[in-house]
Each structure stands twice: as C-alpha cells, then as structure tokens.
Image (tube, rainbow, N blue to C red; front, side, top):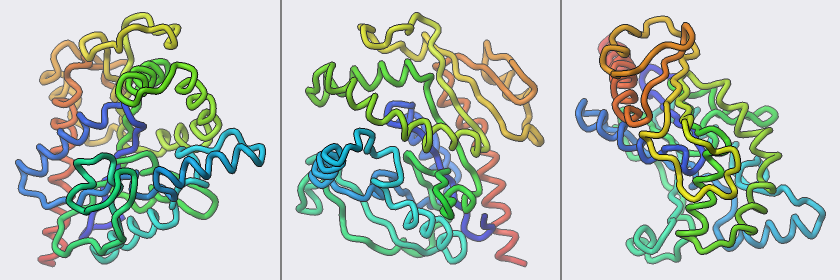
Amino acid sequence: MSIQHPVIAVTGSSGAGTTTVMTSFVNIFRREGVNAQMVEGDSFHLYDRLEMRAAMKKAEGEGNRHFSHFGPEANLFRELEALFRDYGQTGKGRFRKYLHDEGEAAPYQQQPGTFTPWEEVPPNSDLLFYEGLHGAAVDGDIDVGKHADLLVGVVPTLNLEWIQKLHRDKSMRGYTQEAVTETILRRMPDYVSHICPQFSRTHVNFQRVPIVDTSNPFIARYIPTADESFIVIRFASPRGIDFPYLLSMLHDSFMSRANTIVAPGGKMGLAMELIFTPLILQLMDRKRRSGSA
C-alpha cells in the first residue's frame, strides 16, 4: 500500500471483459490527467510462447497433465510482487512486455510470442496499473495483492468463460473443439487453486452473468451479448460508496445485497467509470497532500 506511488491491479482471465476494463481506466486517466504506467500480466509469464509449449510437453511426459499459465510454476510471481512492492515504495521497478502478435513485435524487431528485455519503470508516473491473471495472487510467502491500493476482479460465470474461450480459440486461433476442451480441463486445478481465490481478496468485483441458456457451453453457437447479460458488482466494503447515486445513473439496476449492485450488461463500462473515477481521484488527492506535507 502506498500514498506517494499507488498501485491499481485488475485481475481477470482472457475474455472476462478486460477490453472494457482497459478502455474505462484509460478514459479516466486521460480525463483526469493521470500519468499511469501500464503493465500487462502476460509479461510476467515464465516462458515465451515456444518455451511454454516445450515446458507443457515436458510436464506431461513427467505425468503432470495440469501445467498451465494459471499456476505459479509458469509465472514469475516473486518478480511481480517485487514490482508492486518497489513501485509502492519508490515509484520504480522492473517490467517488460510480452509481444502477442506481429503488430506488437515489429517495433522491437522480435518474433511474436517473445518478451522484450527487462527495463526500469520510467520516472514521474502517477500510479502503476496492472491488468492480468494474477494481480491478487498468493503462493507460499508471496503475496502480490497486499502491495496494491485498489484490487479489481473481472470475471464471467464459468460457463460463459468457457463459451468465450471456445469461440475465440476456434475462430481466431484455428484450434479444434477437442483441443480447446483439453486446455480447459488441463487448467482447471490451477483455476480452482490460484485464480478463484483472488476474487475474495479484491476490493470490487465485476461478474458478468448471462440471462440466456448456457447450460452446455460446448454446443453454444453464439456468445451471449452484453444485452443478454447482467453485471453483478460486489464491494468488499460498502462504506463510502454512494449507492443511491450509482442506482440513479445505472438505469434498470438494483441492489441484491447490502454491498452488491446488479446492472444491465451494457452498462459495465459506465459503471466502471462512475465507481473508479472518485476512487482514483482519492488516491491522487492523498498523493498530492502527502507531497505537500
């Protein structure tokens, strides 16, 4: 936790709505003049794309059929914790980038699926913004999330997550139904042990819940749209949250519990900007007051 150098971490698996999250936070940062240092969770994987394939094959040969990016064995949790801790203390830290495709790789003259060299966080950023799988990860003596000032979880219901993965991997990556299903099964132990527990450590959770039949995700022909979903927004502590204001701005929303708002799926981006703008402004105000003290 830091006053001078806040850390915001968004945890969510691919397809959970991370594009909406990024757009919402970028809008807030731009509108409020916040210089945020962006860090992607993929950059803290242990292996690049080719190395990961080899590591999975090796693990399977040794009888481990559950090796995945969800677990600690394939990630640099200690280095991620060090970045959060060091940034919070000094505004500095080491990070790198993972180059997903040709467009990202071209400026670095590298192959897609590789990492850029480690580098130092540029000076004079206002805060660190992380988005990835492990913003609140805990493994043994490593506790990534304890160094964050704001932890946000973004997760669809499990069947919806599977539908999104099946459609994305088959249509965009050319995988077969059997290959995607095998990946889902292989990652399940790490999902249960290392992904799900993070959503009990977050300050705010956004869970997308479809209102159409997703009972068999393996035969679903379409991904439920935002208009066919609700967003369940859970606050770990409701103190200081202006629920009447949020309900008035998020039309057709309601409260299902004392700390939970249910809003139409299409309102997710708006809800994020309404909720996180004042929280980010509070962090920036604390930072300014501390600097002038």
